[in-house]
Amino acid sequence: MKVNEAGVLPESSVYFHTPGLTAQRLYFTLSCTGRYICSGNYAVSRPSYDSFLLLYVVRGRGYCYLNQQRTALDAGSLVILNCHEPHRYGTDTSWEILWAHFDRRLAQDYYDAIVRSGRQVILPRNGYHASRGLENIFRMFSVSKRVNEAVISKNIVSVLTEFLVFEQAREDSLGHSMRIEETLSYINDNIDQPLTLEMLARQASLSTFYFSRVFKRETGYTPREYLINTRINAARFYLRTTDLSLKEITYRCGYGSESTFCTTFKRVAGMTPLEYRNQP
Image (tube, rainbow, N blue to C red):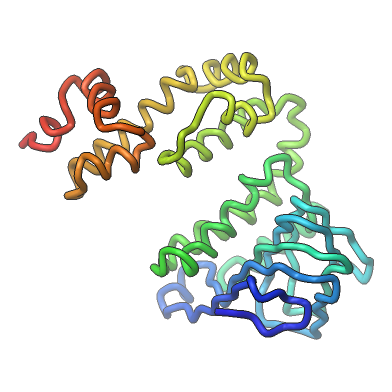
């Protein structure tokens, strides 16, 4: 739904959610999520709001207050706030933010562990990886319109974990394993897109030559081999569990033509897609 708050521009959206009883008993629960595009007079100052807040700065610049001290939030920053207590944040210029209010089981424990680590605000090296959980939650409401409580909780845990592993990632001088893990996640999230070696290397912030070497060492596959296997595995799933046409499966698996898809599938699987689908 559209937003009626000072400083929030019309293209912004917010979604409210009432979790079921099972979710309240078992999971982290979501009360609302949004993507805000704000002008310089956006400011929030509340004595309390019954939740914790995860906020990611997509672009622009803002601030929050931690221990009554103003802290800058640059593009790419990820912050957690305990909104059960007085809290303030906003922007003096402009920004775009993804955010989610959550609570329930273990929320206070996670927050306390993050505060003890001294990392309520982090600037992860890979913004895509850090923001993915919040993006997934937002898209569940804005795009798919199908809400899954367990998946919401899983994505909240994913974002919280970014705070807890941040120091370990920073201390890894090369960070090769984490960069490749992030690349694997990126491939799986964008399997329908025309991914190239250059795009994947750029995502990992490595040269194509060095990226290929590190990828092979970490996974046992070249980037091309891994991408092909991932696409064919997805095709196997669609062929055996859905009634999608070959054309639809072709595009969902990132191939530009049915002939290329069928040729690749037969080379990898040892049979044509239709032969695979019609197996007993």
